[in-house]
Length: 360
Image (tube, rainbow, N blue to C red):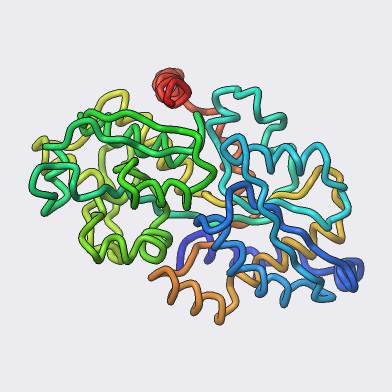
């Protein structure tokens, strides 16, 4: 059980998580809840929400119809703008999707609201992995460290602030691997298809997606997990994940190639991004001024659905491990922490965004 899930249960036990009031108990009776996903069908965010939606329905009072609507565009930002600007604040339309911390941290004008202006409903933490085509080196890769022999890798991405693209870019840049970026894909499934076609040969995705959608590609020997991303603390210490034995932690891969732990501006920016995005990857948000009974019902419903034993069993079966729920307090703290990023990290991230924006 992750610390976020444990924290949510503890908050509920202490009475710090809102109990359902009379208004929340019948708010959704006879209604339809639309969940907007900011990326295309078939991607990790879409699959996650469609798997989760039936459990959320069961735990919402009145058991409303639940509809999942894909709204890809602008690297996922379009969906967040829609929720903030156009969706009625009636509790019947929310977004649950990958969020874009860079868009806010770097002042991207495409995102027309700060995340703390929305009503936070709940979220999910994530583990990100880099994977590559094995034919990127002559004779094919036999182990992850063989990536050191690769040249002219092509990274697939959605847009200039796509977290997956930036994580892959910063990882390869830190490792010293020559590469370029191709943007314009509509979601992770599009990038994966490009991987299969051979027009892209490096990508970053979630561990659950790597273990499900990419399984056949990996098992066939066409692809290989390069490294999973886990943050280091200020002393350079990092925690290995006991559930991941098919690829090294990024720090171990770097040490095998370079004989030391990673350091430098690119690594600092990568490490901050992993800290930021790993704590909360998928966010559930409602429009400002959403009625309190709706917020109460949604927050409680998401918490209960995430801790539903049947959902935990299904998500573990699908992904190899359960998702960790992120409670409202933690989500708000993560959004607040966006303003504390160091100037050096921001400068490096702007360079990465510039490289992504210049990609064709």
